[in-house]
Length: 269
Image 1 (tube, rainbow, N blue to C red):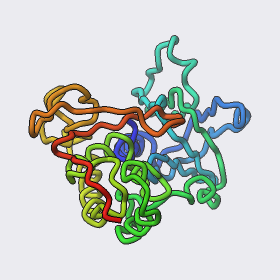
Image 2: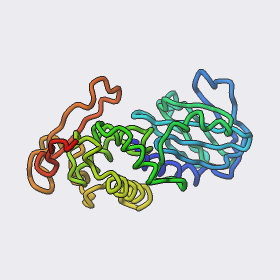
Image 3: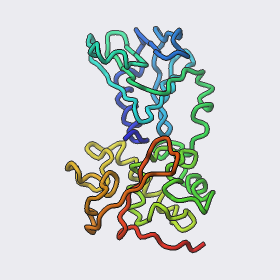
Image 4: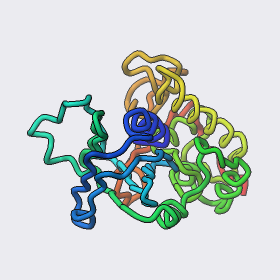
């Protein structure tokens, strides 16, 4: 699932392939930028904010991309290319001189903008645990803004904290023993934020730890509740439940929980 740690790991891969090198080919295959060629520009760096990727170029431009649920990147070795059948899916092609080529496949969001205007595309986001400017205090303040909001919805709101997607929102609720429908007023928000930041950083940076919340890397054992509907809880054996997420949610996200490990307690408010 593309979440903040997914994009952070992607940025590491793209840095190794592109950063500090000049583009021999820079194509943006989207209508808004079909005539904007990036050829000859040098890639300065890759930065992330939540699920957003920023590719900064020496011409004072930034390529902003977002994977959402369907996008992906692949990198080919020097002299190699994608199979012909896959090439039509490439919406971004960045090939460096005498080096590898990065292909952005099926990416739904592709923007090219002045680097000074990056705030236009990421300025609305909350603090990100994977950034140097992370502020736990600010994250806590934003999550507490609406005390009657369900915690699962608050964690998914990128305006409050950037980087937690559906997997992490559900797993963090389990790890804290909190039912996803608990209102934020009844949740120990500082403890939840501290745990979430620690988990996201570990997942983003440690080999073999990517989105493994149980400590068990075996297939079907990596997560406590996410994706485990109808299966026994790995902690207590109770059947894990699932429900469609907020009505009208375009992402069709689901909510998972263990009724025994995460009992819904009547609000104190």
